[in-house]
Length: 349
Image (cartoon, rainbow, N blue to C red; front, top):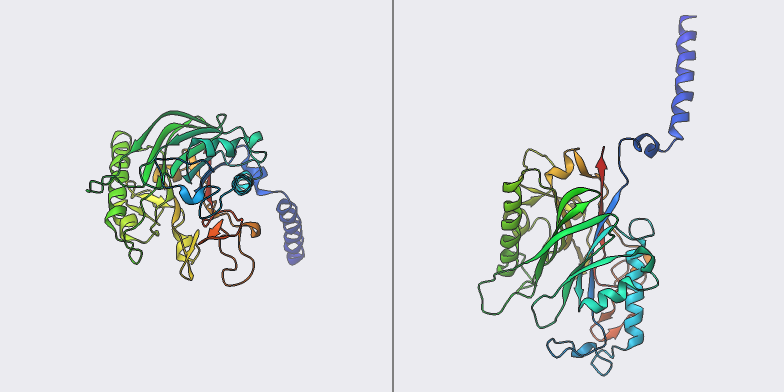
């Protein structure tokens, strides 16, 4: 009889747990957690229009240029990139997305006014960057989610008379009512491709770290999100030692940034493919104040390389790698040579 009672108790416990298992976990979290907000970054790979700019080297991307860059090809590229952005974060686009390699503000406006993105009602922050290629960075945001209060360009001093071609955009604002600082990065290309310890990258890392340190000195709980194409992987000294972005989320090391894509790198994943290997050049890093469970917080495990089948090569030598627009002068009609990345945050109530 004693064992019979225990068996009966165990039986009803199993039934109860089975019933609970059918209820989505989010049902129990809704009262304590806010709606996830998606933060993304996308290097669009030379998103040029078809109009000649005499101040930049855009000649290949003209209808009469080497790449025969026609209005039809441009329209297809806009639709492709806009379609990918719309799909990130559940079908209506991320709340905030940083963009790199856009030629000017007009191409960004063409993106947000496209059929794919018009309903998302994005606002734009765009900045011109130096460099012969004339490629800029921008931030798209949904005003109902993110309200910018100020912005500035962080200059990268490479110690040479020729200005650095990269750039960093700093935007301060409120995300779901919480103060946050965003840094959108497109670091200058390495002078030598066979090393990730480079004076161009070091100059960018020092400039960014200086601004982050100033924010943390003023407010040790400053919420900071750093995103971009760094042309260096998470384990490179310029990332982990100069920028002080690591793979440890321990809040004790509160001056460090937590690189949310460090484990993706360790596991051999990447956002860019070069010389037979994936590289994790695109990353999103956060201050430890976003993982302490107070106010706005990073959703652990939400980091993701967005790489659906349609934006990859499906056959041949480059199977499963990003399907860009061109390879040399060969037109593929694709998307970008980078995969977009994203994380999610939410308000911890």
